[in-house]
Image 1 (spheres, helix red, strand yellow):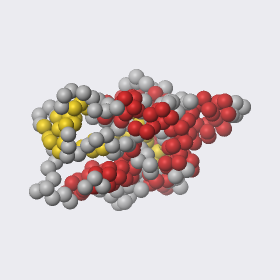
Image 2 (cartoon, rainbow, N blue to C red):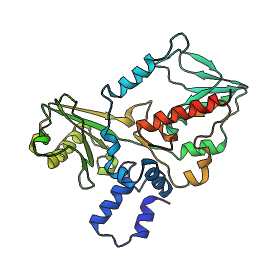
Image 3 (cartoon, rainbow, N blue to C red):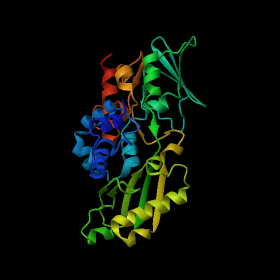
Image 4 (tube, rainbow, N blue to C red):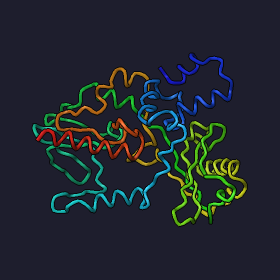
Length: 310
């Protein structure tokens, strides 16, 4: 059952204001309740630490002073290059399982290992060809069905840069959660130095009637919406940057969600290892799903799975 179906049948007489509140609770971050299942809404709410956390996303106030890429580089620099070889720019197109080893195929290289950890979303993982040395697909049907029913929606992460965080002088903290504007949430991402002023938002074009719109049209609509919150100074950023997640061929979208039947029929395949193949990524985390913290915990869990075999 779709989350939206449950909302409409359980609360048929909600006034518009209450409908907006319920939609914010159920779909404030994972997307529209018209897309994901009721079970996924419940899973996401519990996983996030409760509905208040889901609506106001207090956890997103914490950020790394070195940025996301900086964290990855720090972790990478801690590895011993004599023991760990890193291949960047080598997307895996096929994984072949044979006995006690796996062979990962990329367009320009082949890597043989005892175990493989697939740290991508289910949708991206579904594009990898999994096979045995005799060509037989090693993944059971339940795993293939699970990946097909756990898609990604497209999203935009946009940043506006100003000379200073002018909204603070007006007593505003830069955070918004709303269902009445194209910009449905914002955060103040101004660096610790206090300048420049930076606002960030996460937007689903399909959800706000901008599917198919040009990048320039989207920028104008979002900037006008931002000005409705923070005043006319928001109309004149000195810089604007936007990342269209669904246009990245290695990512394909913003956040994963489960469609009706995914959890109830195929949930047993969520993160169950299949021979030498293990599953990670934030989608496999029982804490902070769709967050960086979830990805971190999923990596620890996958590592523990492997270590327990030796």
